[in-house]
Amino acid sequence: MKREIIDISIYLENDVISDPPGYRPQIDYITHKDSVPEIVGFFPGLEPDELPDGEAWAIERVNLITHNGTHLDAPYHFASTMNHGERAITIDEVPLEWCFQQGVKLDFRHFDDGYVVTADDVEAELARIGHELQPLDIVLINTKAGLRYGDDDYVSAGCGMGYEATMYLLERGVRVTGTDGWSWDAPFAHTAERFAETRDASLIWEGHKAGRDIGYCHLEKLHNLEALPANGFEVSCFPCKIRAASAGWTRAVAIINHD
Image (tube, rainbow, N blue to C red; front, top):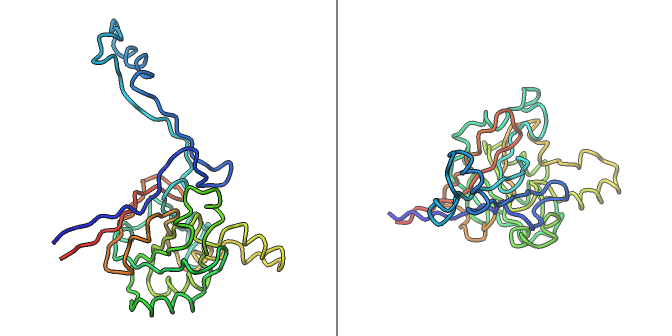
């Protein structure tokens, strides 16, 4: 048996519009030469030219929020409660068994940017690919946004999962979902238009807010979902263990075992 591992994560990097202004990562790169004064400070009497090649170490200073890059959102991100009133769990409390399970990919690339996916859409796509959801399946949503990463419109690209579509998954035992868009929900720019027309605040973050009824996690800013089959693979997405946090970064991968 041959194991194929497919990277479905984006980079943490500068100069890519992967988040709105004020939320983007900032990485400062300290080279082997830049750090020479630091290593000299640890060893009294050491002269820089005594170091092999006159070099010390390369390190990076990173300024992030927990929602930069490919990350796993905890129920606490969506609301203070889950499961109709229980305290919402934080990322360090997410059951690890949720994070390594069989994967399913729903292809919604044909939907327009800003479209809100319904339960009927989910059911129709599951029928098309011939998959019956199992408890703890990790369901990945392939949108138009996946191929727009690196472009200026990435944050506003792709469809989003509505409340009823999200609940369709959760009621069948799904506890981790994912999207290659910036958000599980429709992009804010499109939701803002709908809110302006209706003044209905329940439209804002409706997919996320499903977690108030059934606690769940989702991955955001996945990548390369086009390379995955509809099913027959596993997903590994263990988050960084950040105490009491709303999310944690993850190097999400898909694993396919070939006979």
